[in-house]
Image (cartoon, rainbow, N blue to C red; front, side, top):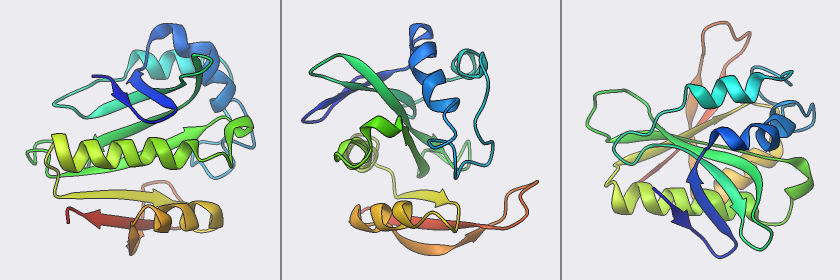
Length: 167
């Protein structure tokens, strides 16, 4: 399923996107607040081979429309598989050279609109490293509000959880 915003096309990730996404996954700045940190090749190719799309949920390549360049990825994934698609998690990562230009907000808004509109989701959540102040501000600008903490297996401390409900 293809989604569009003003400057972006959001399309399913293709095997041919591996090099562009490896540039994101391998960048220490882009992965600074990630639980897994920067990853060596062929991480992106392996990651792509395991992606699935189901009932409108999945992972999209973020393609800057003017230059047809893959600049990152975004996803909406089921929080509890089998819950009928009532709640999904929003995730997004851009190459640092595309930061601070509004592309992340634009992509996230397209997925929020898709999730609440086309998919009829009840709630969309996101989790971030507690030290990631820019993500905190960004999520609040999108309308997500703090909703507690989330302790993930193997993490030394909880992540901050944010949520927005269909209005």
